[in-house]
Image 1 (cartoon, helix red, strand yellow):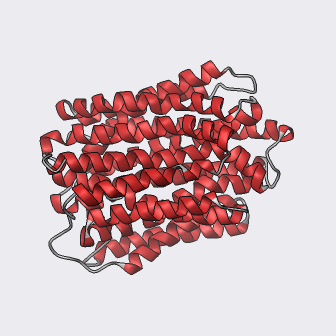
Image 2 (image 1 turned 90 degrees about the vertical axis):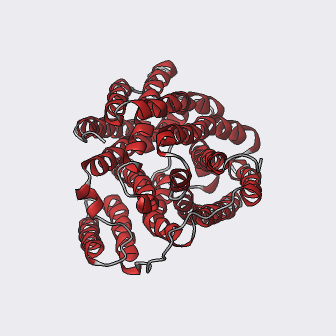
Length: 455
């Protein structure tokens, strides 16, 4: 193994990590209905399960990206998995929903450490002309993890209970940590350390927290005040980053490159459209259609399976052709999938849902890798850590906005009631509105992707 070139060893380590992390994260979605019943959680509490994970990832993505540039990307990557293992173990022994929500928040911080550094490691060790193929392989591993997650989560939940969905992650993480310790040499940090921007980190955390809680409290006065505070914090963060000597992110990067800024904006909208889908369709298939967790997992894996198949080819296309063209075609295919998905009702067949998810998966497979390659290729070498964090930040902020809006819909239509046959009509209204929101996001993303210009 040690005779392999460092870029190959790094690719193996990051791919394994990017398979394990989404596998553990997404498998939980299928386990949410029995978990909610066992812990006696309300609909609103259940909706915070994925939201708190994403909130934490957003809040800590830039700080950990900066720490990785200063102290070593491998170091942050490894400690992210240590924290992920700890939080998964704590979730597995949860006896109430409040304990579960706290450790899901911690697990989100671990996700920020993992996803904010892996791409930066690959970019640092991979020749430019091979970057698209390498990023395509990494994306494929993410999608393989997402593909396997619903099926594994469904079978584990059905046969061993929902707690096994958290326990099964632990030996996988242990194996990865042993591999990294033995074979992956190097830290890939900047030659000179820059001061950590505590003020900027605080402003960004206030922005993310205010956004999530503000949306969840609408239309109350508190909700509007929180959203106002969130916007003010974001403006303060941008102004602060512009004028200090050692920012978390050099905001001038956005004005210097239209490719960089529009690629990030497109990613935000695309991932904002997609994150809540597995959560909502898991509820739809189990509560409305009456499928068991294993059957639900088999249906939901279709989207990620198609992503995993397409992503490596999309990476090679990004090395040969203009990423803008490949990514925009992907956006359009995703839009077609959502047009099919918005037509579901209380009696829609599983085949219809599976076909729509497969179409969305093909589109996302074509979109993600060329878009990532465009982002990483539009920045200076010394800023790849921050660019990697920014890329993942765009993804997680999109996820956060999409899930927060879904939380608002659940709060409005269902409120503090628990999911049951009596709330099926309200759940269906929530799902329909959320799918129309997702379609709108994707249509705007198609326009922005086509306007990003040549790399």
